Length: 331
Length: 128
Length: 133
Image (cartoon, rainbow over all chains, first blue to last red; front, side, top):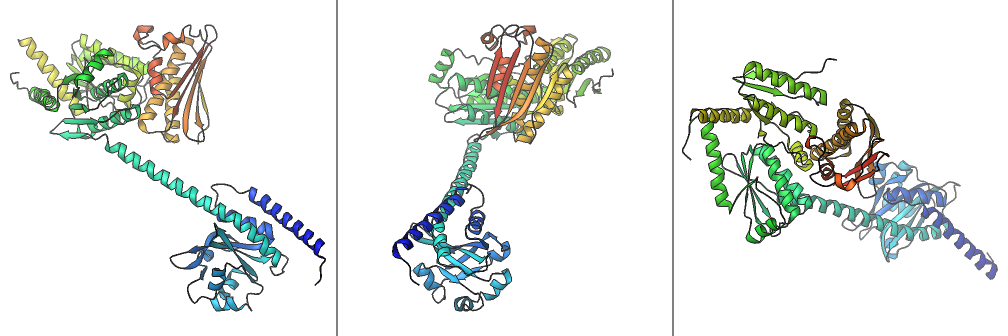
């Protein structure tokens, strides 16, 4: 075959440019979040004019290529069972190591297909001719794209290989992005669950004796946490049928108007559920802040520390229990 | 117009009513009238108002409850409100609506015990 | 997902219907029971104000969404006398009728976002939103 060099190279450049434009057009339609393999397969089908396409990814542990669902033109259970071994003595290994693309003009006569024992599988899914082009990410092969059966019935040629190689380099980035995106989403969900657990743990209620609940508060209380405290307190009252709740703020370093408001509301809500609130552990600095801010806690009983609070709680309960029986104990 | 009336039961010498449906204003007012009438007729010493089935208490309802407690008190009956759901309690305190002067208890059982205590202590005070 | 719902407020029965449907919408959107109660209570308070001060009005409930989160919006509108001093009614402790007042500071506490647009003679529109956490 003879060609004139200059016009051949111009033609070649034009072909390459056209190929790039087609790939760009097809690739621009790629959407985040939607199944990446599905999109790649559909785009290759359109790009090359083929009937089928599948993506296989390299599995390092098993040293083989594994088909990824969904493919175009091949049912999911079949594509998932499609495996090309690449271990030591595999006939496919040399192509993989050299990173060469591989064209199969005819399934029935191709020696590598026969050697790999994949002829039956090919017949089952209706593949007559096929090619495999490597997906390279940062120089590393991570898998292959395998289109099959050109619609015009012709075998795959150099142009197909070149086109798909360029496409595959873009696809590699998209696959990696998808993986990163999924990893980030999974991590974010995991963190959200951990945070939920931590927040639940940081508002524990402690039932002591019959009818007394202690709520030890530790650390800074923001609006969000205050909500959780209130919810935890009230469900604790219902669960343990508490008649007295001791809110211990010894471990809360800062009590400003916001926190004071929240505490007052929590105490009042506890009262609405029939549990008398007792506030303990207000330190000198905090006491000064509260009075200085003009917040009045006068409707809520307060005691110095937890021990005093418990004594008072017992007195309240004792009085309640005894009087309900109709007897009376001197106060 | 037939407004749904809330049934008021007698248990020992107390009255008990349990509100089961969303209460519109007219029904709440009717209930208040019925209750005070029953207290008057039965000379009941105490009344338990159970709100376990109520999932929203707004300022109007809270005002009715507080009024009922005050009016019943004037007629010699103590009122205990029971069964407030945590979600309702939180909404009430955030709304800033105080049912000041209303005694509350966790449930009907506790409510009756509290009523007994309240009534008994009143009797003792009367005896000196 | 539920679409926007509208209720004409003329009587106390309408108030109950609006808050029952509001609670349902909140539940469907994924709000927990406590936020459901807050939303239902806010609807009840706001529509009661409409009935008390304007005689009639419209409550609109709708699901709202941004790329980051979902929530529920309450819009309460009437052509009543309007509010002369918005700042005053929003101050804690303000009360007009039998100590009930409009309960607006309290209602605001129940919700995450709260806006009042009102002028004397021009009616009132109150918008309140709550977001899923």
